[in-house]
Amino acid sequence: MNGEPNIDLLIRDENLPAELKKIAEKVRSNERISFDEGLLLYEKAELGYLGVLANYIREKRHGNKTYFNRNFHIEPTNLCVYDCKFCSYSVLIKERSEGWEYTMDEMLDIVKKYDSQPVTEVHIVGGVLPQYDLKFYSDLFTAIHNHRPDLHVKALTPVEYHYIFKKAKIDYATGMKLMKEAGLDSIPGGGAEIFAPEIREKIAKDKCTGEQWLQIHEEWHKLGMRSNATMLYGHIEEFKHRVDHMDQLRRLQDRTGGFQTFIPLKFRNQDNQMSHVPEVSVIEDLRNYAISRIYLDNFDHIKAYWAMISRSTAQLSLNFGVDDIDGTLDDTTKIYSMAGAEEQHPAMSTRELVDLIKQVGRHPVERDTLYNVVTDYQNYNFPEEKKPEFYKLPVIN
Ligand code: V47
Ligand code: SF4
Image (cartoon, rainbow, N blue to C red):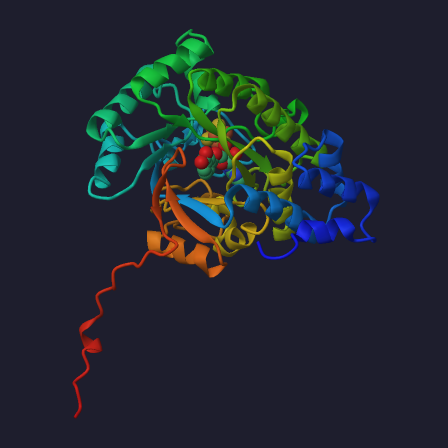
């Protein structure tokens, strides 16, 4: 950063209301903001102010570095015993005709498709069905590991774990230990939605509670393992529910330090039971990224999931606290395309991801799931693409 940091100019601005000046000073001196201050940011702070604070934190932690990985998804089924109102992807068991249910062999075939490709992670998440039980998933994780030991298995959420452990009559601690032994490497952030029971009851009735979601992550962290966290925002929740959600994550992170990344997930309203709820604006998305960067002072990374918010919003988000834009995906996830996201077949080549990041002046770094650097692309030259024959113009003397 050249010259005086923008945050200092902001603090000296005489027109800045005292309460916002106090928050800016706290951020400048690395002090944690309170619940009420988080709420105040949602209620009163405009985008420019939030961008200065969030970008200050982002650049202090990561400079211009912007992370991505090479991954693919396996979505075992889109059928589900639950009936989350926001879910465009699940089909109730009774409407089975539109669903898919992969067998173990079909899932391994998907893994094998990537045998010659330099992917580092498989992300497995889908609906909940009785046949996908403790034994099934343990066998799947072990089989993936046996086939390709270097592939990081990031799989399932507390929604699935709660269901399969209950069916197997084992407690969370025993269950997570078994999963680790079977070959699970980390847990993705899904299933968190909004923890507040009064909202969760209305949008995600019957599945694991917010408290149970947190307990399962805590047991996993106690084994020395890492996970992510999400928040589904922009539907019927109020600002206080978002702050409460982040506050519960921040308190667990203080105890365990096991979370790597926070991923705000924008509610998309196509073809689900909440289609009447309007989607929030891009401005609100950016405000939300920035406030999460400011509030979650003990999280290393904030991720914008490009497949959900579009490539251009992902680029913008890099000025609002975001330092990670997820992975190449290779058109292997349907969760968001079915809910109305701009990307109907989400896939980007490494080169496209690198260009996307460089176009907005940031420094692309390919990481593995645990944020070890795989390739630094700042000064990397991609091999010349083979030009079609008609580029060979005759030499005219
Ligand atoms: O839990 C479902 C969300 C999540 C909709 O950890 C919806 O790296 C918006 O958690 N509108 C699953 N969101 C995806 C997920 C995830 C994605 C990318 C990276 C990581 C990670 C985790 O998708 C669900 C739910 O919260 N979701 N339907 C919808 N209509
Ligand atoms: Fe099932 Fe997950 Fe969809 Fe809820 S969000 S209905 S748990 S697939």
